[in-house]
Length: 222
Image (tube, rainbow, N blue to C red; front, top):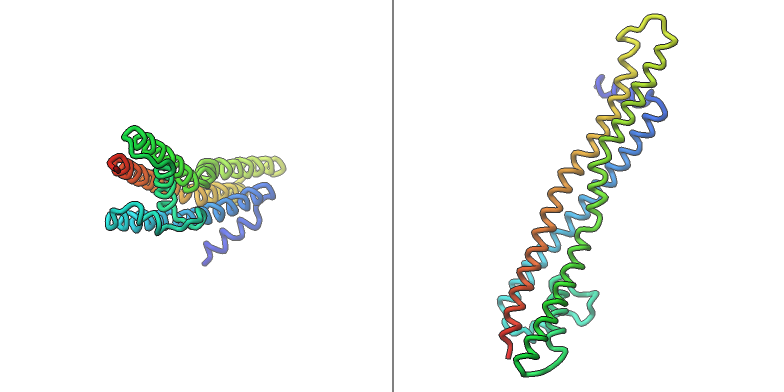
């Protein structure tokens, strides 16, 4: 309890610049956790959508029947439904029974599905650059507060005839808290960024695998 009160009192008594640095780092930490939690939910929904749709895809091999099940309005489709719908819709846009036409239709469907999948991956990836910025910049912002606080403490020693540890220690302790705030913001952001980027790449790979699988099936259509 005493240590907590001591740290709190150091924060309250810190210089204006150091307090501003701490406040900025607290806001950055809160914002990073908002991104982490919201992005985690989005990625969980995306994984669930992939699993659900792929199970339905394997169960029902009739592509036309499966296409009729998905919503007609694009905005109401799930990502996997959107990928499948864009590909199959492009494939059936021009009806022809010749082999050359079927090949061209399947290639157009392949490009349409890749475009849709890339747009979805961009959506999943959105916000992670901000998380990376917080992870990389927070320690330096905290370090700036520390350097400023220590510099301010040493400048204050100019008016003291005899410098002692008791005089110097509080100012240095106040300054070092800024570094602690910077690490407090940076460490979770760094760990979450690496984890979330890995999950987005995994989802992108699953989209690609599904597109390749559907592309092969479309090429076999008669």
